[in-house]
Length: 427
Ligand SMILES: O=C(O)C1=C[C@@H](OP(=O)(O)O)[C@@H](O)[C@H](O)C1
Ligand SMILES: C=C(OP(=O)(O)O)C(=O)O
Figure (cartoon, rainbow, N blue to C red):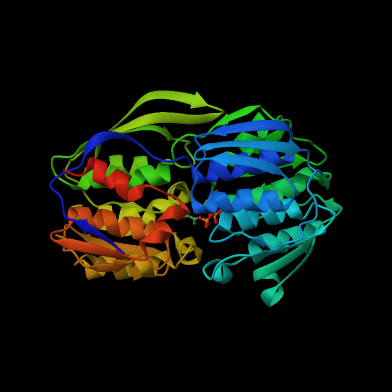
């Protein structure tokens, strides 16, 4: 349980922990590559530590201290059959990408996770991986954990994913790297492309085209030696929103990944009227990075839907907080994927913000927020979902009185040090 007081303003010059998606991939691809890779800026959050723990059980030597990691890669077929169950904790990215990798390995593995993972759909990866030839078993015919996989010889496929999901795309492409022939994944809207970018930095030929991505089987990964992980825009979103909704605020978040497939929050902030600038724009390991500066400004409600949704899917809980402080109505649609995250994020964010006096309604594929409404402190619950806990905390900063966040520990999944950062910028 953590207590948040309503504050006057946020001010400061900060950084946020490393990007979660890039940290997972950095460990996975380094383990599968020939040679040693050092990683800096790694996110030492619970989810990425689960990825490290799985690869250790698969026989890979990994040293980790804070945000520094050293992985002794042994090549694609250097993994060994695990004698223990692979526990991926709360991490959807870990289990779905691991299923792709383990489908190519000539041994048996069993994967479990926590109670939230046990409710999340896995057919979206087990379906195409079975089509490629993987032998997968699991509860409800491979829809839910526990899952087990015996990998082996796979055949490349053309897969049209019904959802825009980087986890599905990545699982199928990774399996495709060790399959016979070519593997192509099409998705309705482009999802985050960290897998494609990082595979290229490991020397893999990846063809991205309008609507899809293709790889050839039989390619090996060569370590680039070093990977620098930028700050996570999904974490930066929380202090940025605090600054935009609390009068008198002004903050800079430095060294944030601003990959266009992730930067929908920047577009939304600008369209709502935020005073936001990107400085020091550069590219690090094939990923665009910048410093983001924002000042308080009056906001207006907007409609958010279509192709932008995968570009801001994890930021929607905090965008809902933002919308409570915008003049007029904000409609979020085409975001049914929110229902299959750590919690049903449509229901959980509506429940928590309603307790604080927000006027917010759930819809089939999103929500409608009526602004501008003053918020009042309340007893909120993360429901075990890091992004819901952090969104409630940001609402608490903008609210009158005191807000209590129950089950705040879940925040360590993606943003260790979150409350320390909030204290640093609160005035
Ligand atoms: O590939 C990734 O690193 C992620 C993809 C997204 O999930 P989906 O692929 O299920 O949309 C996102 O919500 C998750 O936080 C991280
Ligand atoms: C959905 C998320 O992560 P994952 O799918 O990896 O559990 C998230 O971090 O918001």
